[in-house]
View: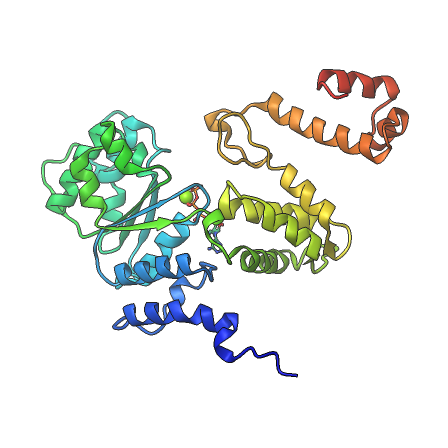
Length: 361
Ligand SMILES: Nc1ncnc2c1ncn2[C@@H]1O[C@H](COP(=O)(O)OP(=O)(O)OP(=O)(O)O)[C@@H](O)[C@H]1O
Ligand SMILES: [Mg+2]
């Protein structure tokens, strides 16, 4: 008997409707933008974001990309550059938070020989090097205030002056800036210049956190896992990893505070740790557990915490120890002798000491 469900009631049809509106908006754009293909997405919210990015890309206007850590800001910046008429010219990415403040000016604008101690030769800065291309100012909110003024002037005048130089040089760069905090909030508290903000925020692209990308997570899991499989193909003992339904459900329920980077790292761990060809629920759970939040740092990966900003080694050790002590005790139903064996600890007593140290019942 007929189910009575017509074509129009099928979910695919429902999904196509907003697509058509987007298609209408996109009229006048090049029909395809393969440059954005690396940004895996399917959700409506991301379709809207990509469309905006495509529209901004073809013009030389400044773009401000806002998004939490790991949402793909750098990936987006590169895609915009690649889709722009400047694609054949340099894309220079600068992490504004990583340059010591006393060096920022010479890194940005260059210097003449003898401009300061150690300036043994003249050197072009990033802006000169990026001439006719794109400068990506990552973590723009970290730019020292004194530099904010100089950057503003550079953008207004379209010229740079190397440190120690008398003359100026004309430059033509497109600016894409990124921030993982709200820049307008920084303006409100006075730590970011309002005039510079409005210079940079001509096109604003907000990358939503993974938790707002309904419909993307399953696709991301598949695509990222495929990429991981591809990358490990030539490694000894390579197995093509699949993910079980149960494991996928665990990942679908996770909130991904570290966004796509966290997904990538979690899947990599799960792929490495699973024995056979299938990532099962336990593998998924373990892989998630191994991304502890350390101190006040945002999502972190146990082995990739940037030491230069300080880490909390004791906290990391504690989370590793706690996880495995509990796992072994659960596995042996509380038998401490067996648990000690499983963990490679010398004796029941050693295990008891660890349990005491980490406050485990
Ligand atoms: N939609 C996506 N599809 C596929 N890969 C993605 C996507 N978004 C991000 N990635 C990947 O996730 C990782 C993190 O992305 P990226 O470095 O661009 O994020 P970010 O916003 O700059 O993070 P941070 O603020 O921590 O610097 C990269 O390896 C990137 O290739
Ligand atoms: Mg980044």
